[in-house]
Image (cartoon, rainbow, N blue to C red; front, side, top):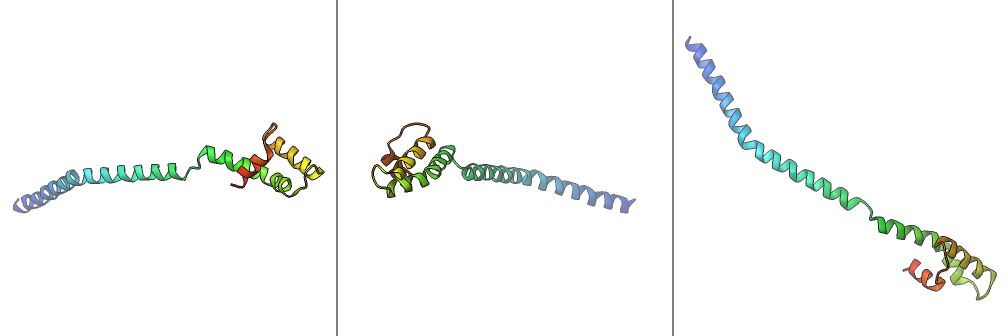
Length: 106
């Protein structure tokens, strides 16, 4: 009987110790998990490319070749007219060609 009580005492002590560790450790674990979740969310938000910048990059890339042709062509030449037409098509309307090309290479 003494052995049984001794074994029961060891089990109760072990259970109490485990409960205390759980009660003291749970807030630390939960707080750490919350901080890691917030850090992950912030990292994902920072890595997403801004929609405005995506549009700017698209238009600058689409107009780059036409701007090069516009800038190296002679005035009133066929190459200049083709470059102006290409720029107008990229921006779907008449644009200030010199200003657009300055923006494209800025």
